[in-house]
Image (cartoon, rainbow, N blue to C red; front, side):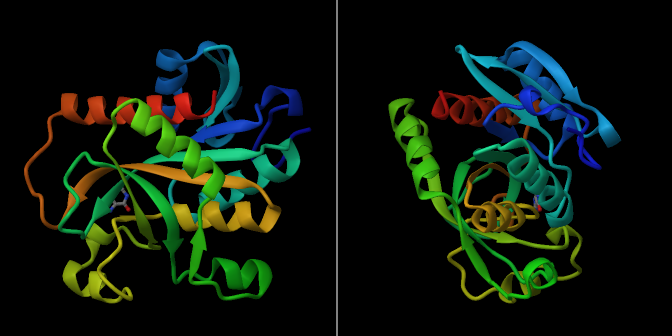
Length: 237
Ligand code: HPA
């Protein structure tokens, strides 16, 4: 039952999907965390794999970058493949003084000024919450594993903020300074999940900060990303 963007059959895809932005991260997760992982999509190189984690069937499927891309994949997975839960596992920046590089953040919801919702449904929504139920599973698991998980609001932007001429001006276009993270996909995922009556959460590792400018080693990045991936997997078994 292929779609314009996904070549998989319905039974190839699990009810729970982990969704990194980067296709090669999907491959990395499949190769390093899943058992019996099989490639189930390579259309446009948007790699998807299905395998098991501690006996539970799980799919890892890349979203690409930005609301339009995650909007397409989340819509097709929920609507045509009966996926019930998607956890985005991505990277983000932060403008918040309380957030440090490599912190792991769980998004409570995403604020966004995009035209996506207007074009899709003729409504103009500024903020969409993530799934309370799925968030609770993730928070409980983080406590069990002693992971210091930050929980708060996300800014989803149509531009990569680091390319703005004046990043403080960019920050000041948002309603307040309480946002913990800035990235480019969460709103699209949460909006589609809400529209279709499904569940969505978003975990992020902080890789850029307005206030924390020390440089990261690739080992540090990998350790934090692995911790986030494991937290997502442990939360859904
Ligand atoms: N995505 C990922 N990392 C980032 C971003 C983003 O939008 N902005 C700053 N760092």
